[in-house]
Image (cartoon, rainbow, N blue to C red; front, side, top):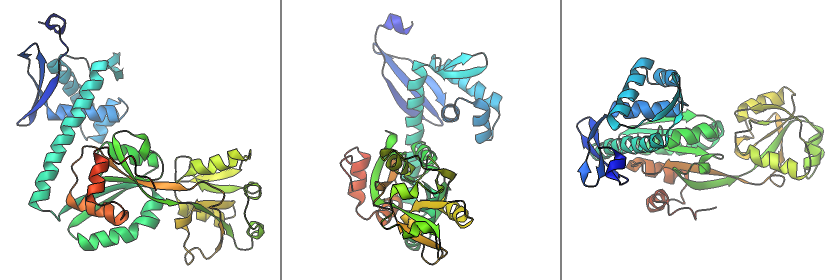
Length: 348
């Protein structure tokens, strides 16, 4: 009997049985059971997360390409649904059914991770790991005092910092590879993430001592555009506001070098490549005494740093405490409201 003969669109429920899941489609009261190995779900999600490249997924999982291909074939056979559109031996895209299967697999794996977190929470509330994905600017200039206070409060919690660009931070958080993502760009673009606006900031211009630009008071975009500029990569730290400000004036800045972090920008400003546009918190009057700092917040729109959490993920108690240390305006009830989708009104 096939689905057309049954005549109704099924709905599915997931039942845990040992190390396997039972996916139970209901057709007119009949239950057709397929036993799905959890490893198959992990392999499936890994392949999708690595751009349908089985070789890259296998390398990331420290397993073999044939092994992953075999497990995915078995999963398709057990479900009776083709998950991928294939072009020869290459996976070209997900089928319509495959999209649903992948979404269900992600939910299943997430719930299993939640079970592990619940067990860990009640077994040892002050022991575990806090994984944070963030950019260099946040890790270098904003997080140190916060993590120092956190470590004093939770000495048995291991801290893991994953540095990347904002898109990577968003993706790692969406895939639940980390507990928290912190960045200025990209986080609010993913619907699977709940984001909290933590603080706003702007930019300053760094020039060598005695630079003529330091005599321009107040600084203008027209004056700034006359010099070569060293600033952030296009995906980083509010770069979109910098581009928008020049474009609004009809100016084309001469950006001679872009970098992934503020320290690299300072290095090349010191070498004479150009003037630097950096986040204000990246300037330290002691460490950066070789530079003149020029106020530039009147030139660019302010940026908002956000903290992101994967919706539906169970958070350990110490994760809530970390968030409150980082953004004191959010207590546990406010964080939980945001995770339920009730926090969209939060703005600074």
